[in-house]
Amino acid sequence: MNVQALPMHRFIDHHGNLVSQLPAWADQSILKGFYCDMVLTRTYDNKAVALQRTGKLGTYPSHLGAEAIGIAIGRALRADDVFIPYYRDMPAMWARGIAMEKNLQYWGGDERGSDFSVTNDQTSTNFTTPSNLTIPNNTTQSPNNSHCRDLPFCVPIATQCTHAVGVASALKIEGGHKAALVTCGDGATSKGDFLESINCAGTWNIPLVFVVNNNQWAISVPRRLQCGADFLSEKAKGAGIPGLTVDGNDIVAMFDAVQISLDRARKGKGATLIEAISYRLGDHTTADDASRYRSEDELHEAWGFEPISRLKTYLMRQGLWSEQDDKQWQEHCQEVVEQAVERYLNIPVQAPETAFDFLYESLNTELHQQRDELINKAMRMQGGKHG
Image (cartoon, rainbow, N blue to C red; front, side, top):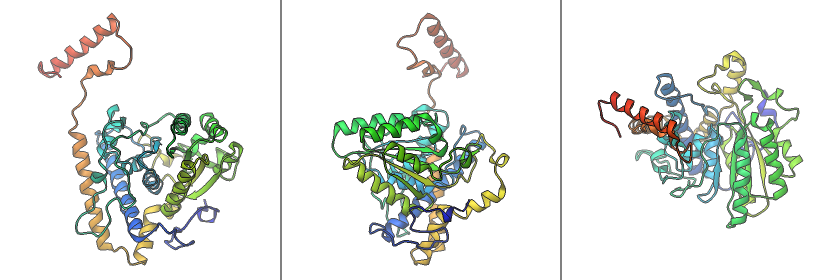
């Protein structure tokens, strides 16, 4: 996989060298903010895997290697835009104002963690800068989503794309220069849901951006066995929309591409398909063992292209970051994540009878009986205390 030889949108290569002049918006404070955000997301990711291994979290989909994609998306979206995520989009959610403990709640098996309609102004909790570091807080102006309209996690592959078409169509009717953005993995582009969605987006000229995280593996199926096209972005041509291939490990290129595409959508110029080239450095989920289907040599090579070390190298060469800064920030990130974990573990569990909520308009006699039996069992287990 000679990623570096692929023609794509890129500013900083995997050695930390500039290959194109940085965009005007990319000042040092924004770049440092990007780096800090990515380090925090990786700290969370490592902790989430550890929680699953110790029985405190359910099956968890690591975003290891995709930090640049998520942060770029979350930072480029405006507060009144709508984000339609798939299951590996935690970094984008935090940048949108969703608290870390809410994501943990979802992967802990509590569906309330996927309800983003409640007040969300936790951005400062996720991305707070310690006073002894000169790192701007929220340098890329992430929104305070007190009235968040983002959709919940979507686990079924590609179905979120059709939802996104509906959302973007509604935004077009609503007016007001708003856009929707939907994400999916490379495997999802082989599904009819995805192909129908980009076709509708092109036909209806709706304000929608598709971001495909091409991490080279759809669970155990490699990219080369999924599609005969050289680039997944070429699928855009048949839908009549622009397709752009971006180095998904270069957060500058990712933010630039997403920002341009969203701006285009908000101005009524239609949809765009972005293919973000990355690599899934971890297993597909904690229920998977990627060593069964991919080689150690391939994984070792992919680590040479990951997003965090490349931006750190660039910043240090420019004199904008130091090992001491890095040590302090790593320690701060650990504290932030541990605090989020503590809040997650202290969330009161739902009463067991809530399993019957929202399933039927009304419960029949048999279901009422089952619900009462469950309540009585829970009361006996708790010594008569319940609710």
